Image 1 (tube, rainbow, N blue to C red):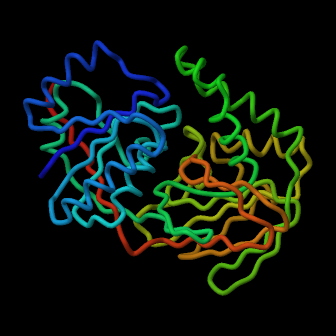
Image 2 (tube, rainbow, N blue to C red):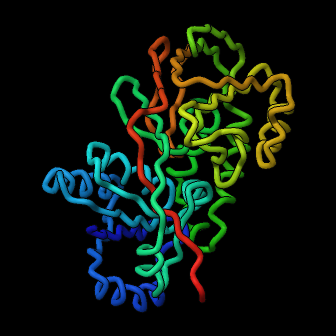
Amino acid sequence: MRKIAVFNPNAGKGMNQRQLSEVLPVLKDAGFDIWFTASKHDAENRIREWCRIHPSERVCFIVSGGDGTMHEAINGAADHPHAVFASIPTGSGNDFARYFGGFELDEKLPERLNSSVIKQHDVISYGMPAVRTAVSNMGAGFDAEVAYSANQSKLKKLLNKLSIGKVVYVVFLIRQLMSFKPFKLELTADNKSYSFDRVWFMTISNQPYFGGGMIIAPTADSKDGELDITVVHGLSRLKFLLVFVSVFKGTHTKFKEVSLIRSGAVSCRSDRAVRVHADGEDNGLLKAGHELKAAASTRKIRVASKLALDE
């Protein structure tokens, strides 16, 4: 199997140059191809082009970066049936590795990959209307606005260098709490229609975690063929803050203003333009009255998970 290591030097924790200088020769000796991304979407575009040229070759993309880099990698290889993914978590959130598993960047990486097990998982196919893939979660509203504002901020890069990148999300959470305008949401799942007023956000989950370890969907399972939909609605600003903080422990599900729906597919519309994210990456605005569709895709992804080795 071809092995391509994709390094995002701009991911949350940055690149440890000393560590890289020790590990890169080992990876090259083991036959790895080494790529460094130069800009946003570079990983997706390069992987898509490689898959186009090598449609029948088995390949493992070892992605060193955060959830956004993994999101790009999976979309780049969306039409390549022979792709396997492995994560080296160096981002701010790292929810992909938190649930699906990750690898350390050290001299044992080739050995650990060779002894890993490959597991199949569902993904989320979504469109508004263009069809893309999310692997962990996607959604619309407050959380998407916070992520968008934080990712556009120069403050995030500064705090990442200080290894406290998550603080920037707290800053923009407070800002959005003061200015965000809840919206009305019409949602259809399993042929049932729902209407929610004063919606703060709606999240469609394939696994429990989002936002860097927050347990948004405690029962979500990437192998059950269903999506876990969470709608937070009908709250004052003060109570919303209380509910949002409780997501860190997954206890928000006890509030009556948190509605939980499980379905293989969902469609929704809002009464105003709302921002959409997928795996924490901005996906633009869902216009008022336009439809957002999402479904647990029949196309699985294959993820390498490490087995414990003797040190």
